[in-house]
Amino acid sequence: MHVRTKPDKTQRFIELTTQLQKDVRANEADTLLFQVMQSREDPNAFGFTEIFTDIAAKEAHANRPYHVAMSAEGYACLDGDPDIRVFDLLGEAAKAGVHA
Image (cartoon, rainbow, N blue to C red; front, top):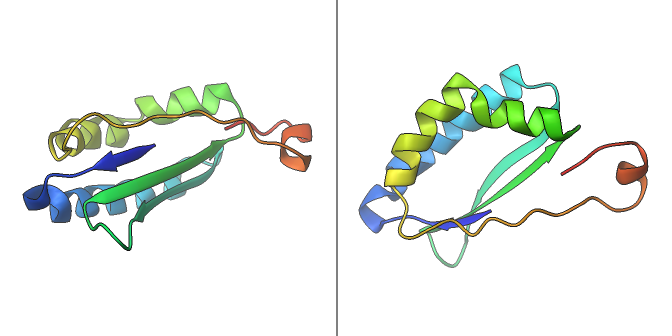
C-alpha cells in the first residue's frame, strides 16, 4: 500500500504507524512482516509492506483493537485514497504456504 499524508499531518502519521509497528510485532506471530517506510524524495509519501502466514492472519490483523483505533486517526492524516495492491509471494515462501 502507498499513501500520501497531508503535510501538516505527516508527523502524527509517523507517530501512529511507528506505534502500530510495535503493536503488530509484539502481538501478531502470524504477521511475518509489517514495515512502514517513508520516501527519501517525498517526506509525505509512505509505503507499507505486509506479509502474513495466511488469509486468516491478514483478516485478524485488520481487526485487532490497536489497528482499528489507529486506522481512524491515521486515515484522517491522508491526502487522498490509499493505493492498495495485493501480491502473491513467489518461490520458496509460496511453497511453504506463506501468503501476502
